[in-house]
Length: 422
Image (tube, rainbow, N blue to C red):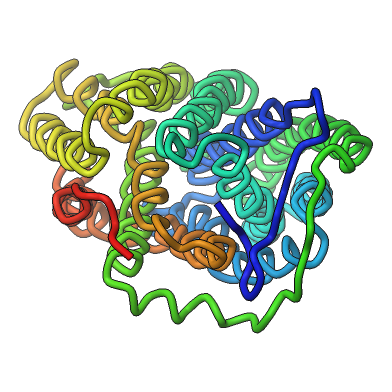
C-alpha cells in the first residue's frame, strides 16, 4: 500500500528485523494515556465542583488536538518519515505530561486543560504514524485484520491504565466531599489532590522519554523513500469520494460515542439506581469497558478474515444499540454491566471503519490517514453534547446520543459490505 501524494512512497524494513513490535507498543501507549481521561474527569469534576458539561471539557480540550494537529502531523510524516515523526510525537507527549506540574501548582482548571491539549497533540502525531504504518508492514489483503490486531494492544493499554489510575488518582475521593468545602479548606484540598495527578503524569513523562530514545535509536530500521509533502489541505479533496467521506463521518461518531460512554462510566455506576458504589470502586470497573474492546479485537481479527468487514461492523453496532437500550431501561447490576459490555462491541469499530474508508486510496493513504485523524475530534464534541443532555435530563437519558451515533455507523457497515471498486 503506497503512502504519499504524488509519487508512491516505499517503506521497507531492514532484513531480519520486524518493526511491528514498535508499532504495537505505540498503540499500547497512546491508548492507555487516552483512557486515563476517564479517571481524570471524575477527579477534576470533584475538585473544581463542575457539572457534567464542564467536566466534559477535559475531552474537548484533549480531542481538539486531533482537529488541529492531524493534518500538520501527516505532512511531518512526509517530510521526516515514520520513525522520526513518532519520536516527535513521543517528545510532545512528554512535554504535555510535564505541564501537569505548573497546572498543579496554580490549581487552575484551565491549566489542566492546556496540559491535556499538548499531551493529545503528541498522541495525535503518534496515531497518524501508527495507523498507516501497521497497514504497510504486511500483506495488503490482511490489512483489516492486522490493524484490528494492533488495536488490541491499544485496548490492552486502555484496560491497564484506568485500573492503576483509579487507585493512584481516585482513592481519596471517597473520604472527602469537596462540595462541602470552601475558602482555604477547599484550596488546601485542591493543592494536595492535584499533586496526586501531577505525580502520576511525571511518572508517565519519564516512561515516554525512555520510549522516545529507544525509537530514535532504531529509526534507521525502516528504509523510506520520501517525496514532497504537498499542500496542507490537499487531503480534503478525498471527502468527495462517498465511501471515504461516509467513513470519515463514522470515525467522528464512533470516537465520540466511545469517549462519551467511557467519560461517564464512573459517575454512571455511582448512581443509586445503578450500582451505588464509590468513585474508586467504580473506577476499577472501567477496565472492563476497555478490556471488552481488547478481547473483542483479538477475536475480531479472526472474524474479519472470514466474514465481510462491513457486515461485521453493522452487527457490532446493532449490539451496542441494544446494550444501551438495556442499560438505560434497567436498574442495578444489569444496567451497569450492560453499559460496560458495550466495550466488547466497540472493539473492531475504529480499525474496520478506518480500513474500509481507506480502501484503494493508493498513494494518497497518508493524506487519508490525516483526514481520518482530524475526524477523531468527535471525541471533543459528542461527549460535550452527551454531558449537556445529562445536565438537562439524566445520565441514562443522555445515552440516546451515543445510540444515534452507532445507528449511523451501522448503516455505513452495510453500505461498505462489498470491497471498494476503482
